[in-house]
Image 1 (cartoon, rainbow, N blue to C red):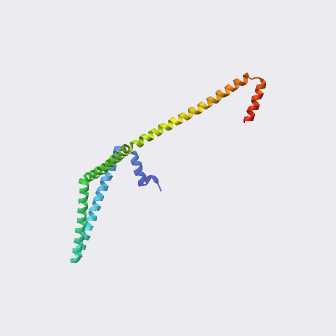
Image 2: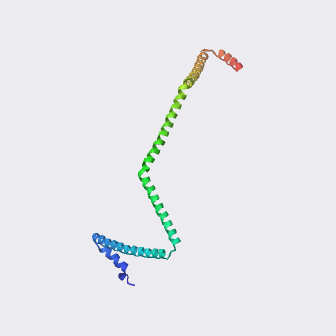
Image 3: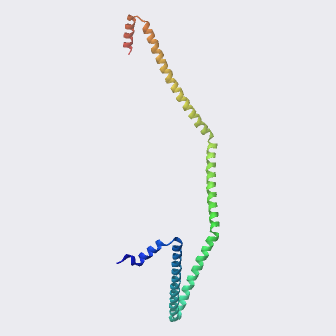
Length: 188
């Protein structure tokens, strides 16, 4: 099998050797040829379908013709109804959606206003409670500060007392120190 003689190989080589304009021209010709072939095939298929329908209608009895007429009428009415609903949706759908969205936004806005009013009413009617809570918070802070100051004062007093005791002990004689130690040991 000689690869150089196969149609696929020749087409591939020819396409790669062409300029872009020649390639576009060739592809456009192929597309137009394919379109004409497709049109011919569609026309032949339609002609066969029309012929088959004519034969079917020619061989059909009166009741079958009425049934076909009834079915076709319903199909056409369904298509008309579908087209009408589509037209209505395209024409008036945006307006309806805008109205619905406006209603939704108004409800949300009224809900937010109501929520704000309820909060304001709660605060306004229970203002004494709000003031008491603020006073409580302030008093708790002051109490914490006073407790801290008391601890600091206590530590300072203990350190002063120890310093005074050290000063007193440093002035005492040896006998006085022994006597103080005995007294303190009996106290504890």
